[in-house]
Image 1: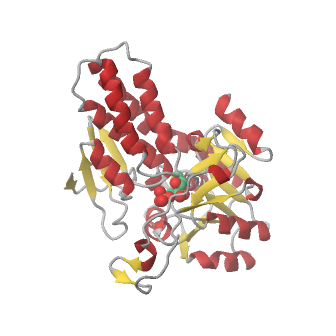
Image 2 (image 1 turned 60 degrees about the vertical axis):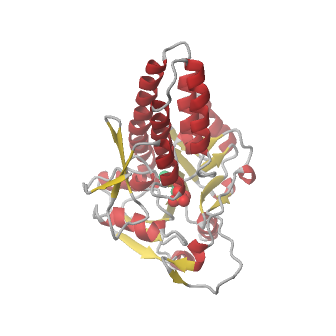
Image 3 (image 1 turned 135 degrees about the vertical axis):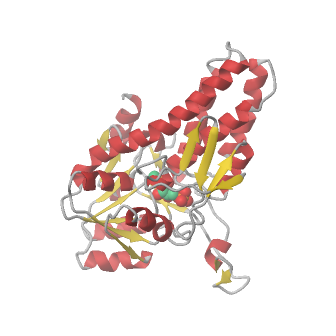
Length: 355
Ligand code: MRU
């Protein structure tokens, strides 16, 4: 892995061109904009688990690129042996983070390509897998822009929109899911202002959402997570829009820890609560949200800020990184193929299977 200084205004946190991959180190934002270059699947796996790259669609894209790096380096003439090795590489990548289903979705797509082309040469498989990884990367931004078009009519001119975590360009290949809907509303000429929850403990709201909106001059106000209820009670929030890491068949949504709390508060105050996510985030194999695996992260994220210790040594800590919002609290789910509301089980099934 090497470091290279590049900066553009359009945020695309993963650059994948001509067999090269660079990723913006999201752990260092907003203080430093550092890009790293990657050449092996082990480096990509490390980047996902240490959160250089994060956000459900972005880790799917990164994993697809990592799978291709692994495939490229397999040395065999036998397509069958190649596939056996490729499966092992995908198993390493899929184990990096458990909650966002986009990771396994992207790797399944890569494996499916290889498995259904086993009559081809190893060279052809490698070329095809590079093409597939490139397609997954390029399709992601297109999908987000489609989601934006479907979702922006939900945001009225002048809307004050609360968001939690970062479901922006940084969490995708570009444009964002929840922030993509906000971008589309701004592009449609509406005055939209954003209230960003800081999102303890990893501070995706304070560090990432605030950074990416500010650099595009979209009005954004940062609050601590525990202030959302107060602002809602004062009539200062018109709707909530968040992303998702996995959506179960009944519409229950796993997203960044704290999302459930915001949804309960929104219900109490009669404020619409929207989720924006691509079809690749919908997991029809899980009947409901209780089956979604929830990642528990290092206790140091809570006891320390950088190297400063905040809590007493030896304190018992829980650090679930995600929670599940029951579908009854969700006003609508916005996808690239349209909006689902009401009967989520039927609506999501229709969107996944019949588009
Ligand atoms: O732990 P993270 O930063 O990967 O969690 C990200 C989120 O929870 C996002 O809200 C979600 O992935 C949707 S991103 C379009």
